Image (cartoon, rainbow, N blue to C red; front, side, top):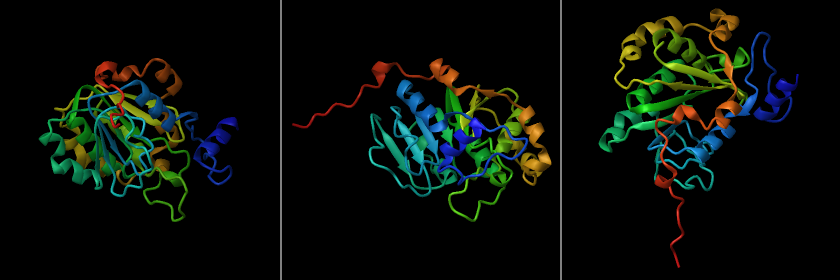
Length: 270
């Protein structure tokens, strides 16, 4: 019951959001925003990509060269922070990758946080594109892959605004497990809906691209009840996000910049 109450508080006012359905194991650890904040405070990479930014709250603490992509921004103040560069693209992620911005500027992604459209085909494409543009030793984080009710895992967004909705991006966990066993996939128990960290990326891999039709033909029509909630949770164990943070976010060791490479901005006006 304590875990459920923490989950409710993390989502908003107590009682406004549903309790987990029977059989679900909700993520009840550090919130994903706190995890990202601590990560950005400790680690800077050469280039950080975030898809699905909206307010900018999740990338505001970043000290890396940052690229934000969202079809409709509603930015809060002070999203620039200590970043050396901030590039915002008010468009879909498909349009962003097709724009050639990364190629024209010779950018390789050290870390990507994917929180765009909550449908499996969109997240699959975002993952493929982020991996293709990744650098050696980089990582990709996937949000909202651990729903805690059947309703929030539906492909259709709820009619009432404010209700939690993860869509069917939960499918990326079993998809990567089957088609990309070469990857290291960790499911962090970040409340409220988990945070999947993927490392061991291979920018040259075309496995998911070539298998996209077969993947979506099999997984597209499935719902979580049809796949099996017990089967879903059997595919992973939650990793404690506090332990990952206490370990210095070691999954980014290969791409983290030396602190001297990211000095704090200095006020130069008289």
